[in-house]
Structure formats: structure tokens, C-alpha cells
Length: 428
Image (cartoon, rainbow, N blue to C red; front, side, top):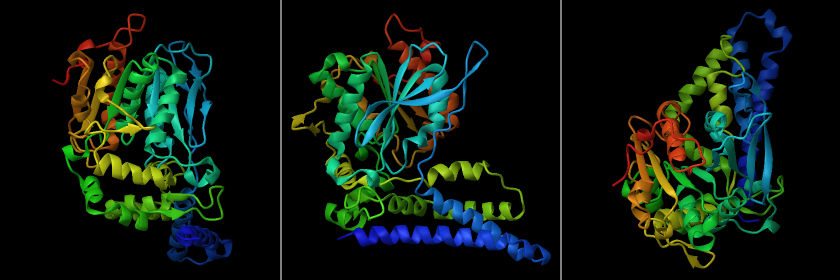
């Protein structure tokens, strides 16, 4: 029962706020109040609408909602999802574009397991689908996974990537976003020794903490300040009776969300006050900018306790990837064994989560890789989100990544549109 009461208390608070919002919305919408010319009822209705939506979204996995993909045949092709590999803690998901010839670029997009669902990369998926046969790692919410499924830590995460790459074959190009960057690098090195024929052709690492000490941030400083015992005491709880994973030790999504919001509390408060004002004045819409962003941002998932704790201890504190000392299933993974997979890093100059220097460190660790197989790009003025889903991604980074993929696809693949751009930031 230890930690379970706290988990259920958080869920009770969330549920209560959702109920209060629904009640305020229902009361403020009561027809009789329309006879009373008092703006307070309009504001109560607006507060209720925004509050109910906010707290309800916290427990809902967003839909992919991928729009049809246009093509050269002047038709829009519908997109569906297909599970290629099904596992307890995550699936390999394929985006199937109906009635379209399969593109030669086969891309595996490795989504982070850092509090949000893989749907956080929806805009990234939409931008890549016209030009790639796209797959993604779709991680499951730990609260929905029975204890009987066992543990899931960073070694298990790495082995999941290994299995997915074996399934996809050697003509795959990997794009790892944020948290999984060091583990995608480790999975590639693991295959280099254990199953060389299953290695991907290229590996693009975007804003990931390969060497967190290269450029300290508030995130890395927090990892240094607290002990593992303090983290376990403060952050870890047991899933309550409401979910299939009852009893599983997790880092709850609601607790993660409170941390996310506290980092920019003033900005979020202003956004919600403005949204309530717009609703009260009749200027808000179902799919306006606020709702599109917060419907995704507020949808959080629980992480297994062992994954969260092993990430902090082994990636951030012990720097096992940065020191090339990472061990998977009792076997040391040597990053120097990567000799044929082209590696590119992407960073944002204003990234306050994985600051410039943390990701590009991967190139120095690939000691067995020739320089012509290495590339890096620093996007000026871009923050963390912008380098994989924002304007910087769409305008600058995406074309460079596609060119890099083409340049390392083999003779039977399409030629890069701009050869120079793919490696213009080649690392020394």
C-alpha cells in the first residue's frame, strides 16, 4: 500500500477539478440565467469549460489524427496505423498511406519516453510522411501494464530498439528525438557487434543528452543535486486500484506534468487566463491554437520507476554513455564498434533542456566511424521543441535530415536534392 494512497489522492484531485469544471459549465449554461444580464455567468461558464477540458485531457491518450497525404498523382491518400511488432511496454507502429507507392526512404522515428505519448511527434510525423515510409515507437502508459509483465528500464528500452531494427531490416534510417538519443546510439552499437546485418544505414540524433555534462542545464543540475534515495522517495508511487497496472511502481504522469508546468508557471497561467477570456467573449474555437497545444501537452503518461531511476542514475549521474561504459544484458556496449552507420546530430542554440554540446558529443564517441560518415547541425535561435516539430524543423532541419538520409542510402536510393547541405556542418 506504500505510495498507493498518494497516487490515488492525485487522481482524486484531478477528478474533482474535472467535476467542478463540468458543474460550473452546466450551471452557467442553465437557460434561466440568460434572463439575468450578469456577465458573471458567462465567466463561470468559460471557466468551467476550460477547467473541465484541461483536467479531462490529463488521462486521455491523444489520437494521431494524421491528415491525408498529397502526392504527385494529384490525389490525397488516407493514412492509417498498423502495429508491426506488439510488446508489453511499446509497439512498433507503421503509418500506412493508402494506394501510394512505398517511398524508398524507410524511417524509424524513435519517440521519447519522458512523460508524453508518441503523439507529441504528430507534427514531425506529418512532415515526414510525404517523403518516407514511416514507422514510430509507440510507448505504452505504465499504469495500464500489469505487474506480471515485469520490469522495464533503459536496458530493456535499448533491447526493444534492437528488436524493432531487426524487424525493419538494414535499409532503415533512424531519427531519435530527445531522451532516446543515447539509447538509440547504444542500440546501434549493440547491433554492430551482435548482428551487423541488422544495423540501420543512418542515425540522426536530435537534441538528446548523450553527454549531459558537456553543457549543464537546470535538468542536469537537478540530477546532480538530489540523491537516488531522494528521487525514489519524492517521485515514485504505486499505481492505484483504478488501472490495470495496480501496484506497479511508477513516476506518475500527473507528477511529471506539475514539474513541466512549474518550469514556466507564469507563461501557462497567462495562457489559461487568456483562453478563459476568449471563451467568455465568444472568440474561442474547438481547435484553436490553445486547445491544439494543450490537448497534447496535458496528456501525460506514467513511466516505470526503474526506467526513470535508471535514466537519472546511469545517463545523467554516472554518464555511462558519455564514458562509453554502458552495459546491456551483462554485455558492455562499445560505441567505437559503429563503423558503417552514418551519424548526424542536430541541436538548437536556445535549447534549455539538452543544450548545445550534449548531443554532438556522440560524434566523438564514434571513434571507429570515418569523418565522412559524421555530420552535425546547430540551428540558431531554435529551442528544444523547435528542432523537431517547430518552424526550424520544417524550414531548415527536415530538408537537411532528408538529404543526409539520401546521401547514405546506397546506389539504389534517390540522390540527395542538395548534397552539400547534408554535410555542410560535418564534424571534425
